[in-house]
Picture 1 (tube, rainbow, N blue to C red):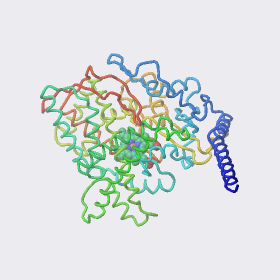
Picture 2 (tube, helix red, strand yellow; picture 1 turned 90 degrees about the vertical axis):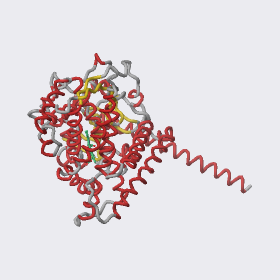
Picture 3 (cartoon, rainbow, N blue to C red; picture 1 turned 180 degrees about the vertical axis):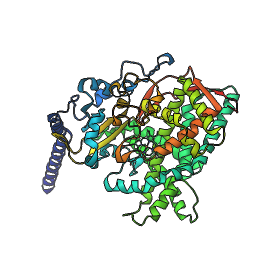
Length: 518
Ligand code: HEM
């Protein structure tokens, strides 16, 4: 009898627990987002109607009717509707600021630089941080590195990290960049001399970028660098596969295998990097000039620091440099080579500039600073094919501008590609490759300064942008001194977003060896 009573009580208890759980889930994942949606609508923000708990994800993942790539004859730089078809569609109906939903997470889409300025500038900048939903999702990749931390932690990390990227420190890395790139070019020369002159430059430049960042970030040898690189790449693919339903409650369960694989790879990378850091800490005499040494020194020597970065945080910073540093710069270089193949007049202009500045002598920092036209080309490539296609924020408190209130928790998705391709901001020649637009203006004559954001904005602007400019100029100069490039019939134009903006099928070019003296 007592036993039956016990079973009955247990059933009742479990039933009540289940009821409570279901009610809480309905409240958190359905009623609460609807209330937030109503609040945002009352504030005047339009947007496509969400269907909870998926939000607008179904519409975003709809396949477009048009093909996934363009043949050589139809290459266009008007790529916004190609890479973000849903945003391009919604913009036509709702304008340049609207709300859409990733699962139960509200996102404010912004492609209006003036609006962006008003809601993020001055004192309001402190109210924004990085979206929790992405922090969680990309944890194996960035951990608590600079890209992801907020508030006082971000200030501490940035304070320790920024000095490592000073021009004096970066200049010491030139020889490493030259050495790696020369190795890649020797390989290209060999292939071309054997008649194999069609090369997927994106693939090789990606590898070179990884080698450079491995050496300049933490001075690790090629073997360990290669291991970290391969694991990071595999992790990126796993994360991409498992983040199709960002913001949808419990969606990780659907991708448990990929999520676990990414987590496991993350742990393996952590162990490799931790070993590098520990051995570096034990070395008394350290004359290496990589970013890790500079971080360790900055961490150690600064008595004014509130606290020091832990080994765990240093690992996360190394991963952040590696991921943030190699792919973005390599993509800028790959897109540039494509542009130079399409516009041979610019190839000639840059080659002439390199000869004028260096006369064929080994490159130094002084020469690099004189490669002005190359700087315009970099900016124009970052405008048309921005490797970082969007920037995200989350309101950590209510943000009020006049009568407008953006509620705490609202995420912001700044459509960098959208702004960089907006005829209202750039004029009728917006889709043309015209590096000279940067001749007299660092923001390319855009009608609004915040309309050109390849490296982000405000206090969180990219800490590695000088490193990028240096690597870009070195690698491109060395390539253009040795080869001219033209486009291969095998190339098909298909930019796509996989966290970064990348060419789907590589960048296949035909390389022609130049006379040594040219
Ligand atoms: C073409 C090359 C690059 C592009 C387009 C790029 C783009 C960006 C953008 C858009 C941001 C701002 C993100 C935000 O506000 O949410 C950023 C931040 C950052 N970038 Fe880069 N980046 C490049 C190269 C590099 C390199 C070479 C490194 C380091 C080795 C690096 C490390 C970082 C870090 C650590 C941050 C976080 C800064 C902070 O939050 O304080 N980036 N980058």
